[in-house]
Image 1 (cartoon, one colour):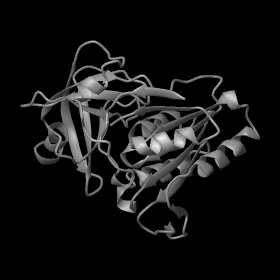
Image 2 (cartoon, one colour):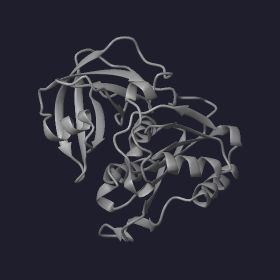
Image 3 (cartoon, helix red, strand yellow):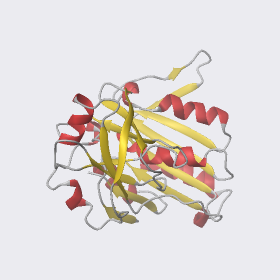
Image 4 (tube, one colour):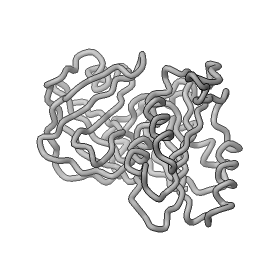
Length: 270
């Protein structure tokens, strides 16, 4: 199991609990790879995507290069506290996208209470768990809990329409906190190489849509849920052709990574 101790959190899904904030983002990611220097950006837009999450789109002054799965150090006006948020945008997009969950932490509080279009911020790309195109990777299995969808969404956006198979298991407490599900569903409809399963832990919504085309499972993602998909893929591919990425609250990552039948790649964001 790849276990890179770092952060980049946009918040913690309360369903899985909180480990507490005993150190700063910079301290927790001290050993992580970072690009040199800071990049100036302007807030292009800020949008509510759920009652607790805002999507921030940033226009860099100069192009910013990153790999799907990486995060940014986030520098805001008026405070020395540095935030860390994973990127959800396609690396080919000219805009950087961050989904930020509300908290009292100064950078997140600023995004939710003070940020507006036209504001200036700075970012610095970092992170050591990411997905690069590989001719040997035939299947990418993704497991997301709550706001942990962010870096995995970047991987999906970069990979839809390719020859690699992407399958996502995505859990949240309620449907309104299952952020980006509509975008994910649209991609799954339009691209044969991407499929998705949804799990709701505190709400029962069996299906949506005029033809009941979107279905939701009740309960958390379990090791059995993941192992079933791994076994399905092993019927068609060698295990070394399958990569599995996890992103979610640390208790979720700890439990799933120790009880599944495949090597998992992850960072602990909180």
